[in-house]
Amino acid sequence: MTDPKLSIKNHPCLSVGAHGKYARLHLPVAPDCNVQCRYCVRKYDCVNESRPGVTSKVLTPVEAMQRVRVLMEREGRRISVIGIAGPGDPLFNDATIETFERIHLEFPELILCVSTNGLLLPDKLGDLVRVGVSSVTVTISAVSAETAERIYSFATYGGNRYTGAESAALILARQWEGLGLAIDAGMTVKVNTVFAPGVNDHEIPFIARKAGRMDAYMMNILPLIPQGGFKAVRRPGHDELIALRTECAPYIKQMGHCRQCRADAFGALGEDRDMELEVFHSKLGEEYCEMVV
Ligand code: CLF
Ligand code: SF4
Image 1 (cartoon, rainbow, N blue to C red):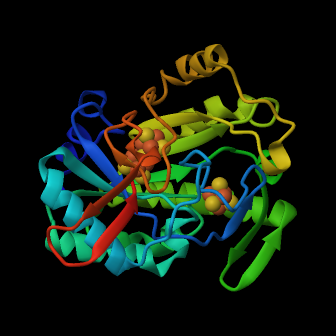
Image 2 (image 1 turned 90 degrees about the horizontal axis):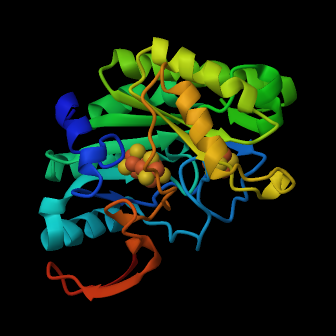
């Protein structure tokens, strides 16, 4: 695992000082998801971490590794973090651990970062530690099962499908357990919370307080992108987002520079190179590499 101090200092999401200086590369190797958030339209990237856009082209671990090699060769000094953030839940896809393992063997200096809905975090934590992941984001948008039930419609776990109150309670329990275990394992843990006005705003300060008490490093409150079953819920305005972050700030450090980037994003935050089509020839091989980065 990367030195925890460096994994914060050089991480463009965790450090305001690093966000204009260092780039992160997201590898879209995780298409499947084990829960259904009601605001998620599955043809897009996971909106717990990303904004909807052109669907990411899913890469295999081998293709992901080629992308890492090409970009490290081209601008390695600027890249500090490799993240896996979808398009589904990274921990529900075996390709995630395999990809991290390959990267860690070849580029041990890179900070490895994963974003998850948390359902599988207690089960996969040992694998994440083994392959060198030092930074974890868990999306937690409720503290009560009633509110969680309004957010999630089902969960698949251990071969069973859970719905209603049962799935809400399962998801919440696993999220908080995973968060605590990841902190105990020495990881830097960020909580992402989707702010859906009228649905969970009253619980967000409680999430902040609980996560702060457990020593999570940072909270990122993301404004809802209204779609799917949440189409009728409005997107919160800038002022109410700032007010909520201010209310939560005494409990846990707040992130204010998130760009809700895509599962295949590349560049410094806000650079928006993820929206460009970059076509180039790999210096490393003969293969022609067409990438959306
Ligand atoms: Fe990616 Fe997320 Fe890691 Fe950053 S993004 S997996 S913590 S390396 Fe960053 Fe993008 Fe916001 Fe995420 S700006 S959506 S917070
Ligand atoms: Fe969609 Fe992400 Fe929720 Fe899965 S965890 S349903 S991909 S928003």
